[in-house]
Image 1: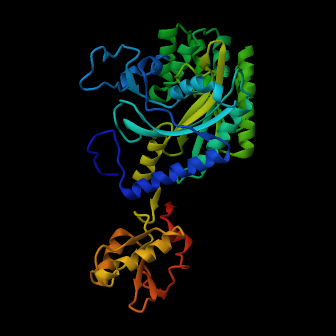
Image 2: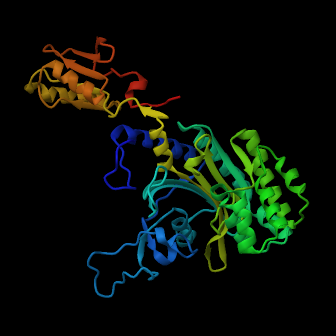
Image 3: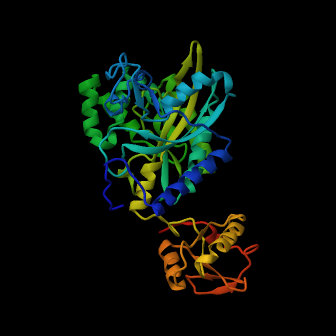
Length: 447
């Protein structure tokens, strides 16, 4: 990870690093499918009007145009029909649901693992081209709240299977926060949420100043908003702490009840992994209920590795609405930290388990017969390209990280050598199989 990328913000992995990334992707895919999520892939481009319809990060969007546009084609950045690369997977998914609603069975459980592009300043954990892994459940007209609970548990299971440090899924509820702010007399709840969302970056004193300067909050109102944001528990005791602040509001009570459901079940199913954190705001306006952010313990400066929430009106078609709840894992951010901190490593950099050697150049076709027999049983095999001395062929295997070398004698008998231990035994290409741990490269967690 000390290598400098030739184009900043567009990471490229070495083979052994890519194996770690593939392991992460395989774990996520397997976990999502075990929970019944179907895979989709959306196109890489959307129109600018579609991407920015919620007023998102227009300065970070990569617009597309041909070097020589044909007459009548627009390349102006304000043109809503201009094509641009998607900067997340949520907006394309909302469009996908609306366009395919007649072909989907609701509630629709989807996972999506794709590249996205965002023009922000590159640093560790932030790239301009990166992979996200999203899961969502979308309903038609309504969506039971229990899905908010389920998704927290699915993500806890998925992250728990990865070679990463301990993590915390920090959960809040926008209804809880908005109801509280209204209860203390702060009606611009979106503005308060945007200020609270800056808490970890600028600190409570500056947030209090912003609330008073920009939103007209009194010192007492700002103090109550900050007291709410200071509440963190790994059980449902947060509810009593909120009520002890003396604020009453119906929306607040709804939010408290919903968050209690998430935390109560999580404390049973994933103890210590999912916590109530009432400082979590999530700045995007389309979240309407549960909100999630996830950090690695001891690596909080990396930022959130997984975030999301409940949205009741992100997708709509006429009078028909498609409420949903979802989370997005920053796969590239995670892999960057796994590699830079050496949390995991691949046992070898190639899939090859066996190199079939050549005694002479005329034996190449017979060596291919051996390779075909082994590959037929799922064993990855390479055949030497030329009949060098066996020592050189063994060195080639060692340099490539290939653990076994196959020899065929003039009488047609076979032997295979484990070049790590030096053990060499007779073998039959029709039945020999390497130990399970050597069949494919293994990802080993360290520390």
